[in-house]
Length: 598
Image (cartoon, rainbow, N blue to C red; front, top):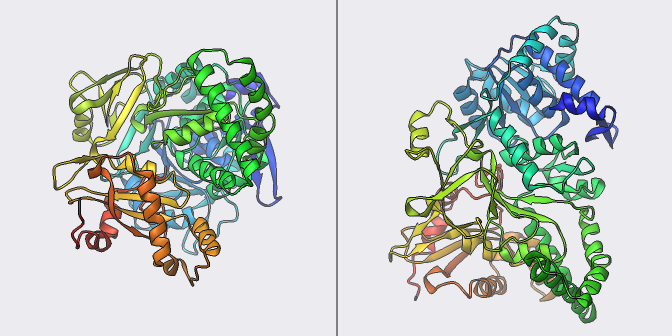
């Protein structure tokens, strides 16, 4: 694909990346991209990488990552991505399970962890390091820097070998093993074939007809995740320029520098945008507050009441929308860095309808969707118009979806995995007798061929009183409040619903300042009775429409956030309930020590 694009686009920019040494953004052309892939592929063949061999990639998003990714395919190898935040034990598990002999690593953190694994491993033989500033361990005699590694292939006679391998690649070949996050157990290697990726290119061409080679896509989510991986392949297939965000924590800064027209993200990103804008509106002078709220009402009427229902907006509404779209909305999007937006795919976790409505109303082209690693990402997504809130979008073309026992969503098609690597029993459990994948999500299909997800079956709680609770619905609603940053609902086998809550400390500090509340630390702040009362009132307001047995009866404020590094969050920022319940067991138990009235 990249080589065909190089023939078509030549010196046009394919990749944009930040050079930390020069402290500026630099470009790489399609021709350079193509040549670099081949140089890396030759070097791989030179060190003995064989067809069907599993080659690991343990790095944050970097241009070298993409060179290596496609170079593995050129050698008819199987790429195995490992999240850049993974711990040594997680890396060790994947290295041993996939039998990875060669591992490409990003920066010092990944190198340190990988070398620790290599010292104890009978499998891992060689590390190739992208960042030339990484300091090797004194005992390390086998690792090599990426640029030196590539140079070793430039003068080799492996070009013929690689060309033969490239010409022998078939759609049925395994492209990659992507290991699941392991929210409910040890990670499983999802086997995805080339035909699955070819299929997502074909079906996304059919669905997303409005994207083009004029777009610039920011690579923000980890390329180790199927969502970013699949989207980036599609973007390259369309001829887009890929801007590579190295550090996820710098995304707000890099978005403003690049101003991408496309960027896939998880709901957490947009939740932060929503809370920030809501806070600005709430604290604005009354005339300006009215103006901004009127702009949102106008956008909702124009985009949702009319255009989304296939209707022509009234003239007066169209005029008002035109004015607001070129003033209030443009200013809002410019501040974020997304004023050039064509499409911002969003998936990986549930998105609140309230936040989705707001984003659509201010004319941010968010496309909400649903998918799994096991389905090569997209199962459904919103169509341009005629989408329905409360759903996760319309089923993708030529994909079979039906509802099975316990209302489980079942999927069959070319994008569905062939199984889990080295796990025949898990593979058998994952499929029905007629070949449909069990997604683990419960829901229904509407007359418009849209999917409604009601709950994650494994996450569904049953209280001691026999009531079923869908924790995600409560968590999503609570996180709409500006004072609440993260939530973990507890209810399984318990008498009532409780919650662990990480407040938004910036908002809390602002509240404390306005109400003359003194404190010395975050721990001190969350123990103040006025702060506890504030969060309690926020919870009451957000869950007012829930059934009585779904309402949070007790909560505990935490001074530290849930993080990926601590193992409490997956790489798409979903909470790992088992980890949290074990880590905070004493706190959770204390919320059930006292009798709470119904």
